[in-house]
Length: 129
Image (cartoon, rainbow, N blue to C red; front, side, top):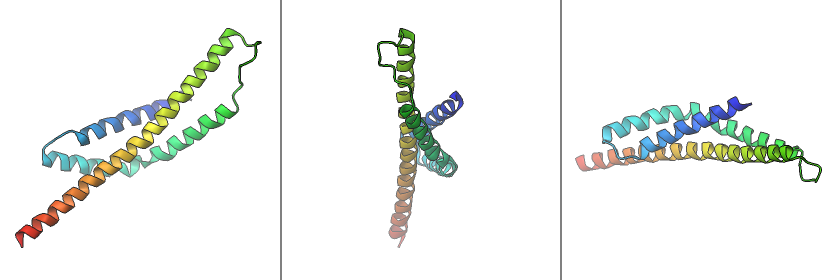
């Protein structure tokens, strides 16, 4: 079960790298090519949104059906295990939310750059006339 979280963590790390590359100042030619590359990657990378949504539903289902250790009969190890699973669940929720949010940021940043390019072309044509 840890494989899906490892995949999600690697995808989030890749998204962080791409967002940071898109937001740092760079020469116009390099920025345009980077935006084109990210735009090509965005459509196949859309799988991360339903994947993260499914993982969130899985976390919710496991949380609803988890054995609660609140009685006095629970041992210290059972209580520790329960708390550890709660912390892991919270970490995984943050990871899923970060994956969706970073995908949205990548999409919007690349869309803004394309819109800026289009407006610059319109302005260039207007100046030529």
